[in-house]
Image 1: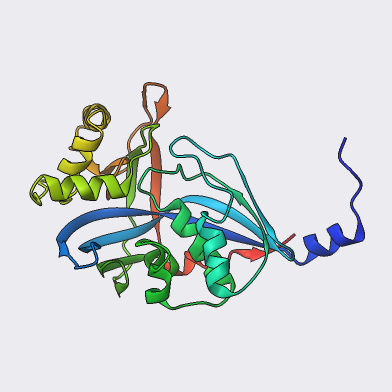
Image 2: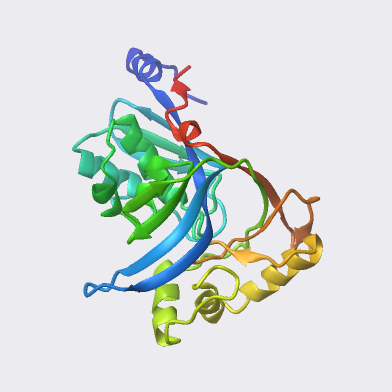
Length: 265
């Protein structure tokens, strides 16, 4: 049985805010080289999509994650990007994350969570944001952008309303492992707009089965999103299932849709 709400609980609820954290979809990615410190340089096009985590942020401290999906386990300690973002901001808050974006799927769920907290705090520095992760700066901006450098150089692009069909395998893919494999393979160029696709298939050969399933169901050649493991095709297609996993239809979001959603109820 739940305990009765106290005055402290009521105060926290009244002062909480609800944040929306859109996933990012990497439509194309070229690896342009590697810096002396080991970070890879990219030239990519990214868009925000309407597959979103939700955050409730309020006075206090602590982090809770619920509805964590398949993929890597979501850390709830200092390794979580939200906690690292709060440390960067010099702030404390009680944060509840309702996860809808699968972790380890290359959709930037953790980066979007961190970026939402940064927007809540009024933080806008993309270079500092990139210190948390390569996707955080784009998620801070949102919308549609060309992303270069190690993720900190952003060129906003005009919004294009588009629909995509995703197939998200129930397995995490390590971005670090994929870049290492790309180096080991001799820096191959991707045939379908993503230089990392051959490396991702080397790290997780079973990804090929999911690519083929989406291609067969839609009649279009599926493309890998970033370092994987999500596959996507352009357009809205009838839902299908592969190994019990349903395809997902999404729409792109304009930049303003990635801002703070609303005050708490």
